[in-house]
Amino acid sequence: MKLRSIQFSSICSYPYPCVLMDKRSTRKRSKSAKVTNTLDKVDRLSSLPYEILTKILTLLPTKDAITTSVLSSKWISLWTFANVFVFPNNFPSITRNNFVEIFNNILAQRRSNLINRLFLCFETCYDPDLVVKMISMAINQKVQEINLFLYPFQVYLPSQLFTCKTLTVLELVGSLKFFQISYVHLPSLKILHINLLSFVEDETLMRLFSGCPVLEELIYEEFTFKRTFSFEISVPTLKRLCVRSSDKRLHINTPRLQYFQLDYTTAIDYAIRNMNNLKEAYINIYFDPEDEEEKENIPNLFNGIHKTQFLSFDVTSTEVLINACLEFPTFHNLDHLQLYLKTIDSYFLVELLLDKCPNLKCLEIIKVNELADGEIKWTQPNIAVPTCLSSHLTSLIFKDYEGTTDEFELISYFLASGNALKRTIIYFQTNWDPTMASNDVSRLCSLQRASIENKTSYVLRS
Image 1: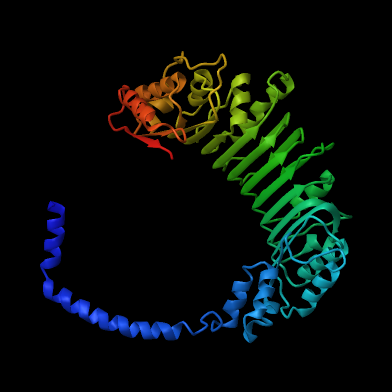
Image 2: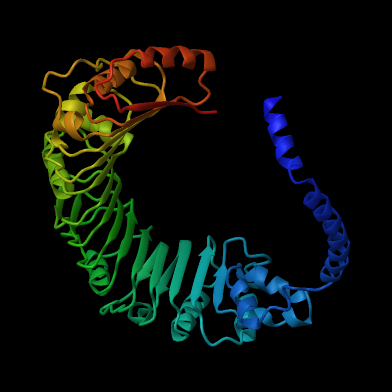
């Protein structure tokens, strides 16, 4: 009642202006209603300048841009001025018989002499020569971005694609053939995505990389074949690199790299050099811990990325590393460590990892599925509290808390040892029973805390 009386008194303190405003607003609303009815009859979109309308059409797939020709007389030929070609896989009415006819008609009606972007996605191609024709036309019209998703058929990429001066983005996915490419010079290319479904010679790929003098982002994926030569990704200008490879050799030389992502890789020959500017590293590797050759080579990977500021280990990586008990280098620059864990092992987490991260500020643990009921359990660490935990760690995040003994003991250890902790966030597992969560919160609240500034939050996800 107090709240209502306060609100009421604040409204009634100036009664007359409120009444006058209300009457005026009534008159204004009646006038505005007439104006609104008039505006509803106006086609505001069509009244926009041609430059803006064609810009809007470039954001649509080509089939949708063509469909706008039925809107009004102004829109009949508007799509022909668009400088973007987007042909997704669901392009309507394409059959083996009309494939060439449809695309030739579209090309014949175009009035723009420039193509900013060419996007082709075909699971079945009825005329590879026409695809090559469209690529060549885009190159001749100073294309800036080409995205090709062509599978499972094979298309021989034209040689002029690899000497295009205007190209800034190139994405190649499928069984693409690099036929007789003896020279590569892409002076403007900054982003290169390659997903190979057929073998390409090592020399050809390295020639492609070296022919991009301003390349900043490279995504390289291949799964089905093994290389025979010393394949290396050596790009001095590269800032972002994502590699997904089944090759046993992985040699990387990227002195300006800031972002590194390694996915589903099983290499046994790592040679990673010159990552002195690395800021983020995401590692998802697998190896057989019983294979001594593989096991001995894994430290080369961590030595190559040890200057990173952010490090994330996928659950597969942490599982094999826990079993292998590898020695890690010291990560002096690391301030954020993200771990996907299926097994909570104090030796791996505290003695092998945290003891090697003296300046760590944030530790994020994401529990994956249910914790393994194996022989590995949380035990009190046998070493002194790591430097990062006693002096630097300010943030602890634990996701998908399930209330197991291992989880409770882990959090207890960090709260009791974290002298610098200022924030602790514990996310309960999805659909966790509120009553059980309340009991767990009570237990966690009773734990001893080394830092009086540590503010703990408990989040129950719905």
